[in-house]
Length: 134
Image (cartoon, rainbow, N blue to C red; front, side):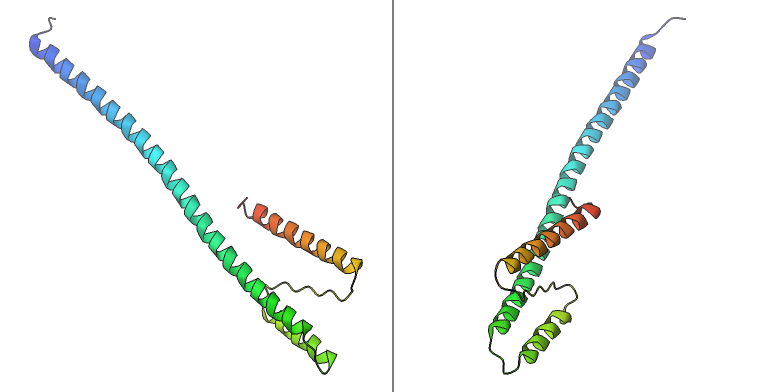
C-alpha cells in the first residue's frame, strides 16, 4: 500500500491537532492549579483577617468589661456584700467572660494571677490546635 499525498497531509494535520489539544490541556491544567493555589491563599488570608477582627473585638469587649469591673471594685461601698454581689452578678451575665478575683494581697496573689494567666493561655492554645486552626 502506497501513501499518497492526501494521506500524508491528513496524518500530519491529525498529529498536529492532537499535539495542540494536548498542549492546551497541559497549559490549562497548569493555569488552573496555579489559580487554585492563589485562590486558596487569598481565602486563607481573608479568613485570618476576619478571625483577627473578631478576636480584636472580643478582646476589646473583655478589656472594657474588666475596666468597668475593676473601677467598680475600687469604689467604696457602704456594705461589702453589695460590692461582691455587684461584681458576681456582672461576671455571671456573660458566660464567655472570664472573671478572676484575687482576694489576697502580696506575692501569693501575683503567683495566682500568673497561674491563671498561664492556664487560660494554654487552654486557648489547646482549643486552636484541637480545631485545626494552628
